[in-house]
Length: 264
Image (cartoon, rainbow, N blue to C red; front, side, top):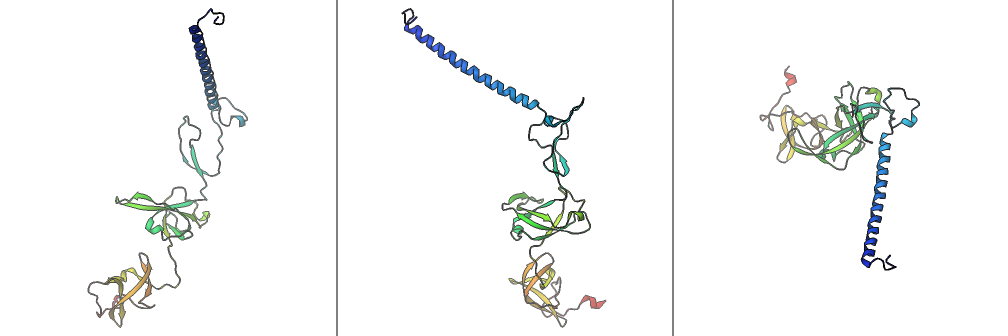
């Protein structure tokens, strides 16, 4: 009509704009259709029961499906006890072998730096009669802050250990059980030791009272490693020397002493 001069230029422009708007609306409708088709496919996928393709038969009232665990073991915990809808990937139960246990202990960072992988450990007070053995396998490189029972912030390090004692000797030990550990920090052969109770400070050095011919003699000593009971002697004492444990304030250099056992 515009070519035959039956329509004006303004009418032609209006018709072209209307065509573009209609084309855009058509594209939008096609996109909406594809989106709805995708939503329909997703809804149908949710309705498909897992394991339905491998089920041999289904009787009336059968509401259960078979889920195969990726590992073998015993059920350690049930995450979802009641029947409800769960999303894909939601944990249902925890399964693990009881004969392949690992020990996790939180050590103070000041203690962890003195322990190396491969260190021997003793597992005590776990409920059985015998002491079990374990070995340090890993010391995590990063510490974390933990508040103690006294409200003190401490830097702790997780240390992992594997049992050396076979599972037959600990059949009742299970997941998340509590145990007490003694980790061997250092071991020495033919080490000369003395009780911690015999040590005291003399100036800036360690010292002990040695009994010589019934007389207490002050003697400075050099000690190495120690624990809550014994200290390693590096110098100042010889094997067979008699020292006074728990010396009182009345014991001094040159004071005569007597062994209590001789009084009985």
